[in-house]
Image (cartoon, rainbow, N blue to C red; front, side):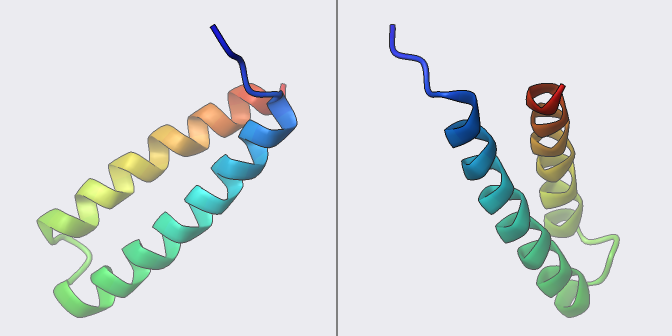
Amino acid sequence: MFFMPINDEKSKLEKLIETLRDEMIRIGIQEGLNSERTLEISQKLDIYISKYHFLKN
């Protein structure tokens, strides 16, 4: 099995988090903060932020 170096994984997670955050803000403005799409992205963002903090420690 191939494992990605932690720094590469953290870098990819940072980019993904930034992209999801931008998308969540855009959709939140367009559809509202309580829209289903905004909440789905928010939940994904929570997961990726948790993974990032796990790698950071």
